[in-house]
Image: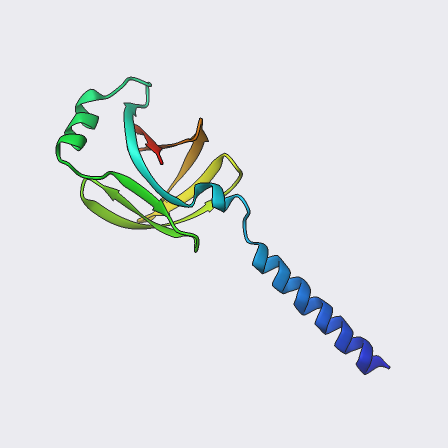
Length: 124
């Protein structure tokens, strides 16, 4: 009887673990995909025409991509860098790239990331 109870316990435990891993982070789906730069401001909230216009004149697609596996890529000014990410809520995403951690905030269906003194807004 003890052996039977142990088998049942192990089976229930295994199924529970699998179901927890299968669920993942439901908020991640909100951020998955490619976001394209649509505006640049400085930290004081001033529109930074020069920075944004220079970026657009270079003809580069300034993008951040979040893949379903928690990895992704920044493509900024033609420089690509790998990243890892995880949604901390349905409005916030934690991003790590090249040893630096930053946070993206979802506002009005736009992703706002502040880094190196710039506030970058990305749209889908």
